Length: 366
Image (cartoon, rainbow, N blue to C red):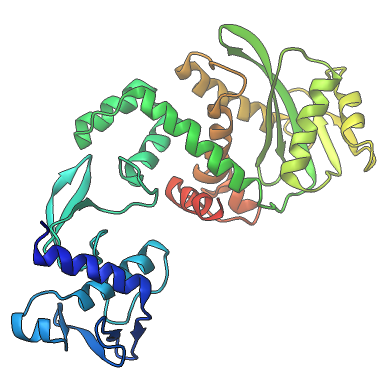
């Protein structure tokens, strides 16, 4: 048989669902009586203590059903990211069950602060950006940053164990990479960078699952923004065309000039990619030169990719999230010495980002 306090919680939930609870200007609430349709009780938060005008509270000084009804309403607002009442601080920790702010710290679990509600006894963990995530969002973004700075999956796992006391398998780290890189890349694809109209294109050999393939990279000259990174088995005009089509999709504009090496398939690839808009001017780079017609920016990008690929000992598949994750890191996270510490995204009129800010924006848009 349920005790009296459990019955008050149940009736409070029924009240919050069936009756209209009104908030006053001072942050107090009017809650209808369940027994008398003409009566309402005022529930207020005074000095972090909920008080009610009902007889149950006045005589017993315990949390009544009307107070529980208010707490449930506040909890629903909190879950729906709606504005909280004036009397509740934005920084207040609320019980996920009854909405009470009478909670106490209760140790840590998986690196996140745990709490216990003094009103209903519910134990819960600190809420994070990613709902129902086992680990804190900060831990996830730390793994992203470490990995794309050149640390292997197993070393990232070891780092989390040494410094945070978390036993995170390297397979879990890889799953995070796969999930959140795709999410952030979908958000980034909605942005429109302000480019200079001069593109560089070059291809490099790369090992994928033990087999040598070609990685086509396209970047903007003035901003250094990497627009495309496409893998192909062969090295013909169709492969070249796909790289330019992808760059055009990201840039949302047409270049005035494209600088490439002397590969014979490139002119036809450019023509096929821009057949509807008109072929941009195609300039063949002068090898070893530092003139505006040099392709040294694309070559420098290749050196960055080779350095990272060496640590990875090759990629496991063509569709690896690491390829797009590296592009995110290169464009939005890492400051470039040649750009006076700015990122290509900043040079293109976009925001300077961190892994956390990118993830927050991606989750908001999803």
